[in-house]
Length: 340
Image (cartoon, rainbow, N blue to C red; front, side):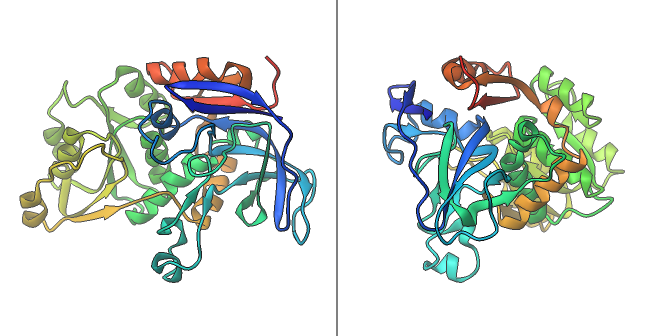
């Protein structure tokens, strides 16, 4: 098998090794496609060197086919088309005991804390599998994980039909949040600085504005008949993005914090007090979010073709990362079975 590994010093390499046979309760998956996300870029930049163990097999957004089944695995067979929830919980910590294993105190995030999916063959616990419908292509299904992030965000925000929703940040997760909110019947506006991202949002049928070109607060006020939005999602990771999101909210609006900020940002608590706002954190996803993500992809509510910019073979992983890093691509997939 072949795998893309981070070896430190902003360096990726493709290595060959024997695949690990599935043990008790495990399955082997031939990975068709793996997406590159912002976390993978952070690892490449060295920002997570204190957490990853080199050489580190990256990747956690994937789709593939079961190629072998270990002992005591029920319900799965060779040939089944699957995606993987890349979260391993301890089952014993306070979060797990409370039923929140997705934010386990000792969470094993596959692709960060243990080997990920950017390899031709991946062995994982069978309990992490999610079945894929026959009509959903494996290429599109590789977006299940980031779509599950968006579904979880929208669920945490309790977005309802007819509500006005502002999404600050029009990158991959921001656009997926916008699409997931729209699928719930919300009226959605995307706030984004990048012209290509604005153009893509509009191509997807979303209202989108550049806050440097218009007064975003006044624009949202007009758009919402003077009230403000019921829900705002901060997906930009910028201090200005938090301010824009908070200022856009109506009385008793909900702010959902999605982006990971590199340093603790200031927050306008006076506005939170004055309008009785609620601040909600949203981290990763639960199984139900993955199931819903697969359904949305299968139903076409998530415009996968428009979001996937390019697909590169595993051998060209460094070029694929460079394309995403340059900002010229929205979503880049690695074909883990292609030669090159």
